[in-house]
Image (cartoon, rainbow, N blue to C red; front, side):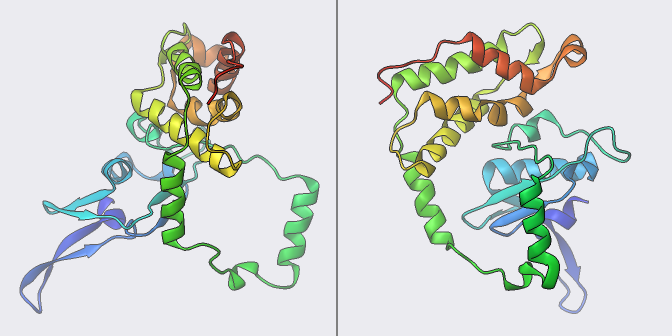
Length: 241
């Protein structure tokens, strides 16, 4: 239920007064495991949280701690007991990443790590909240040049005019795309974005924001459509700064 996630107001019999109990959403990093097993009412309780970074309980608005990040996993929709996430909620996730299976080397390393002990028991912090906030501010200062902006917008507009797409990427998605390429530039030690940042992140940022037509659902996938769109748009080669 929503109250289990965001919190609720309850009556304290001993003190004869109403009190507020804040839910587990009040954390810096919130992991929602198997989010599509939650009923739609519980899913919708995350909408305000993910957009406004606030929670309203009994007409009182509470700010969430900074930094704030929601990570969610989901099962295939064909699994029993799952509920599709509404478009409005999907649009609030910056990226969608398909994990797949690890390589043999990675899986062997996993076995070795867990063979003698549990590495989670020795887990320790490698960065502070203040450092993350500083990095977020640095990312916002990364230059998105005019040609890079036009390239990004051509991709966005192509999703809105594609015959197999019923609903394309929203303006919220455009801003999310910009933030994502700024973050990638920082990770690559640049103070400006390039077309390569866009090409690398297009499917991860855009695919989950699309609603395909019935014909589209039968013929292809969202990721494949985004790949095809990339191939049809000219990449700027000059004036990326």
